[in-house]
Image 1 (cartoon, rainbow, N blue to C red):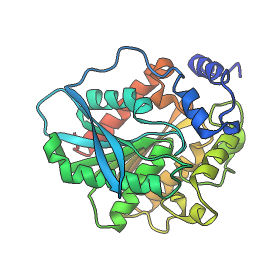
Image 2: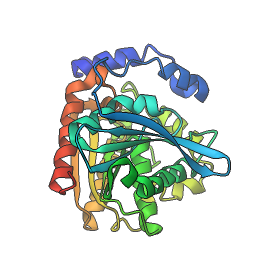
Image 3: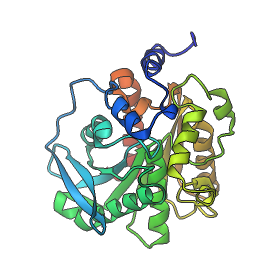
Image 4: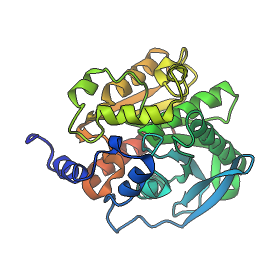
Length: 311
């Protein structure tokens, strides 16, 4: 491990001081991870940050957090789904990076607090994510957003949900999504790629932890075949929007993210693929350790959206 990037080593040293998540009860894991350092105190300043509740069923609601950047608007809308293996994570864990996306790129960010497994297994988080997109379509104008320039994105499990939402929008005739931004997304449940073997242990997101996440999220073997969970199981990806896929070099999910980008490219979807050298899973939302790499990734995202004339 001596060859690791110094910031990666520092992060992993802190990460492995904690008990193994995959040996814990999900509620205890959530409490523990809430204490893990994520950002410095210099959060990006915005015009407004506000929360609202959205109905997702009878007597069921989820929370959205809306980040309005400085400026007059009307702003493109970036719907963000946080990571955490569908089991962990919330609006707070995604708060620093959502502020940065809004401030640095100049988009109105809507962060989605979808319900978590195992209390709410597949397809509930995916359906919550889609309902959030529908709310954005219906209410985007009222929050100074441009509903013709909606981008979906997220990291890890959130990247999986963003792509699932894109599939749902295609299958259900809307809302229209202009682009998707997937940061080291989960795209399969095979756990058997070269990167899974190479980085199975010692790099934060371990193979056993991904299996733990999947067992909490998926109800049965049939769910593993559902393309809204297992993206690579989809028969046709040609209707998906222009995509930016960012992976990390030392991440078990690297190869499946690359395979998803290749599948998109093969069917004619515009896809930009970037593998960030030396980085590990989780870097994108941990400003306390990876500020430079996050800034670089935000530049990639901004350039991608600018090239599509969305910003």
